[in-house]
Length: 84
Image (tube, rainbow, N blue to C red; front, side):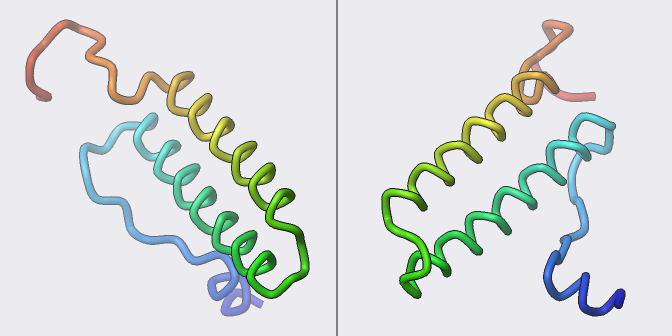
């Protein structure tokens, strides 16, 4: 069962500054990429329309942007130029 789950939902190891926000966003980003892959495959095989796939991907993109915003990813919270 574990092998099947790893095959369907692969996760890459995180590389970068380790903090909870980055780890959560990385997981969200990997899920976004996986879902976009499924949607594009369904659309390519004629299972869903291009308009439907566009709407689904647009919704996923908005969710990812909201995740980034709520986690304050990319914002310099303390006014420092570089990261510690």
